[in-house]
Image 1 (cartoon, rainbow, N blue to C red):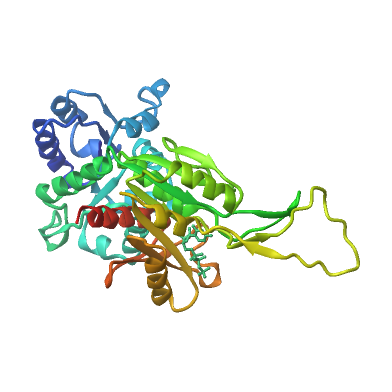
Image 2 (cartoon, protein in one colour; image 1 turned 60 degrees about the horizontal axis):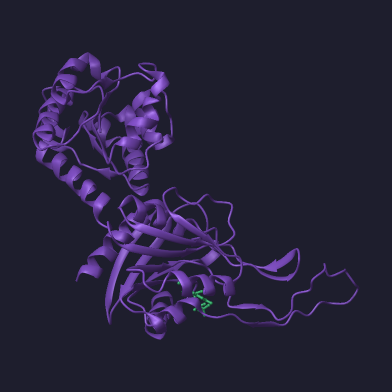
Length: 388
Ligand code: CTP
């Protein structure tokens, strides 16, 4: 899908559309109202042999904003104006293009084109950084002659760069086809009476985003998901668990023959030794709860692993990498992802920082970003390691 916005470079999208059609792509074009002032929709509908959409009200009964992004494999917004970039960064959906993009769960590339001063404005740069953090691919503008008869940065990226960005996104949509992927996510709850339990701050967000991304890449995904308020992604087989023992049983049944297993679950290391059948009544005495060890699910998978590529997470507050390397060896993992959880950072929404460690000395910094973008970066890196 192409999103064409109101900039002079809109005319260049006709040539790009023609190239894509000649290469066998099915292309849907959404134009903003402003874009139609630069190029007529007929140009694009002639090239694509499909209707061009610019209004939410063109054929509302067909719900175009949802249907178009569901049918597409990837979106390129080019030329992307400062205004559309700002709207996307802030979740504003006031026309067909911005509404469709808010509903999109497919890879999105943004190719800005505007005057240098607008491109270099801190607001535009901050909005682009927000979008990068959410996993959008930004195709940087080129430098050269601008419509204002000045030279500077802000020209729409050349067609070749746009085609490369599309090719990268499309390759990603197929990269895990035929692979079985198992992901554990969320906290466990270890009850000591019917309503009280020991748990932790995990929301399962990291594992859910990994499952979403792995499914978007064509993988056959099983998500073992602990108690959480978050919704699992569509198109993924979900197996629920509450306790560490339930996760262990499900993992032994479901995970052993996966091609890739990623353990993000925050498993309680101990559980109360007894569980009262009825609610413990309050007394004036202190309550002693004895805790006994839970099975280490990941270590057990490491001992039994056949062909699966096994990846653990290490939630650390101190000596992050040394501790994680020790877990990598002890649990017989192929790779481990270090997650800094000081002050509950790393839990729930908000940006996170991940580092991937593998082999004796292998290390890759995945940077700081929203969980969705980090999920894509982590899968890119793991796919590379699995192939090497
Ligand atoms: N893990 C597991 N079963 C457990 C404990 C941890 O499967 N009983 C997995 C987690 O899903 C994660 C990895 O092991 O992928 C590391 O978890 P973490 O809590 O960081 O490490 P622990 O082994 O529990 O070590 P420690 O608590 O001492 O840091």
